[in-house]
Length: 507
Image (cartoon, rainbow, N blue to C red; front, side, top):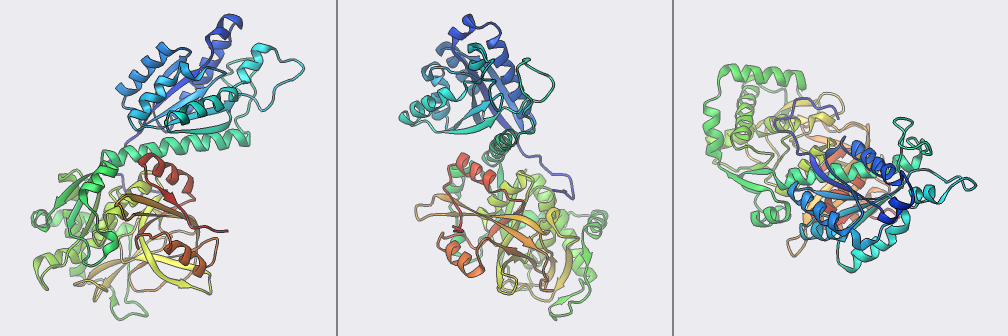
């Protein structure tokens, strides 16, 4: 994803715990085996370091070492623990690590990674076999953990060693083998998802104004949001923004206008809609002035995401402020502070998750179906994630915001063609958050020239069947659209956040 601006706040890195297991009797029987397997652990550590901060407890071959490793992982506040099954080891010898992880609400991922695609059956010794005997203990681990109600996951495949540095003369270069590539893709998904989960758990959500009145699917209990995500909810007032807006200087407005001109195409009058006009100078000036204040608001309250809506007195000061929200919130979203409209906090969380994973997360709802193209058009009247746009977004002046109060500047854009994933974050009748993840394909197709974001998305089944199956899952009517097929990573994030996760059935 090509981010337009630098992030105002960097996302959190995942803190990962790693340990290897092996049978201590083997060390006395087969010289060099332990060092070789420890080397494999260091190789795994070096690969994982590309995605997170790794604490490697080394080789755990007994219960005493397991307790020390459990304490180490607790001290480092790790988000996720990987158990590297280096060779056979009894499950009781490292059980304490998983037990402590479960008590802390952190899952364990067992790595069943063989160092070679196949053994040389005519020349392999017992010691060499034991370096490949990684899967033998995994069923035992699975049974012990399941009977103890300890959550665990498993990644199987090849270790993916390269030509250099070689840990053993017997090692095989499997870096480009499909089973190694797939395994490391899955490991990367787990670590990136853990980083997104940490970002949410330690984040600050701004809530400005109120939820659009009557949208029952979007109402959220702040306590429920904090309990289930860890996000701190900062309740903001319009006077907080007004105070900052009053202090904005003309020089700051001119600087913001330069950013806007570099990022957007300033439209002429719409060829179709008399409400959509070339933005008037006073509209652009007001939008840029408020955009400066919105960035100051984010900095003052140290926000990671923001949701807002306000229905002010017709012609009042606060109505004029909210008229200018869309441009500033699109700019903030481009800077890593996702902003959702209509007070939809759950969708702001979904947008933040996608943005942290560097796949976008643009505010969307169903616009219409196109039965000629076989698509569902997804979009909104803003804000938009500029970093995933197909070309430069367009700024249009609006004579009236549909369904809202006032006039102002709006964003017209499409997400670039290619694979996309939509994340809905909704909740069930018990108030539990639920994720709905659907993958599709954005196509290049005409959109309305009315100042809204719109993207044609083709799913694996036609519009009618897809909508019927989707609606049966009871989504919120907003979602976050991301680029790429990110379903596997988003499902891992839901797993780490303890959100049930569903998708539309496509068969």
